[in-house]
Length: 224
Image (spheres, rainbow, N blue to C red):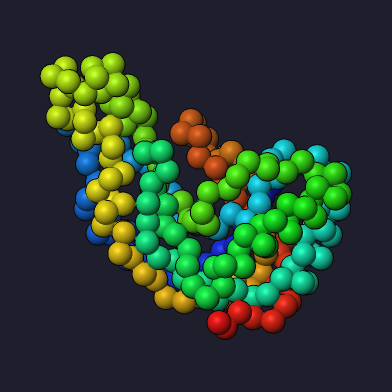
């Protein structure tokens, strides 16, 4: 099973973000036939990744859970806020994480990765990009438009429609760049499983996240 550790914003923080995304949706470009160029992440999948473990054998899950429980017992509750936005490699639209506890997130990520490694669980040790919550990804149409603009060298052969379609996340990112949500407190570390969606006939590659364990962050809360 594919596992990762994460934090989940409060319901109030997620509701506030959902309202803000309404204006971002208005900045979304579409194909001439009206088909979407952006795949929006469903709110039930919104989370802040702490550490990604990849494929973990079933038999190793109890040891991993015990290791994360130890990390959580020593980690503080974090005062955080969703704010700002950006795009990774023109493919992923994200909302950033700030707040008084944001500086402690790298330490929590490192502690979770090291604890997993100590119990023999493989850890993705590629440098993690800034803490964020993914809200959308560029769709297949955007990738196709990007290939056309590259092959045309952005010259006369690259039509305006292709140039716009190749970067459909730019408008929503600009709309969210000044976003600032309410403060929320991360009070538990979650161990989540990422699994394929189970709707009959669904070939979209959608994932569902199942909470296997939750571990209270027991250290003193961050208040600045």
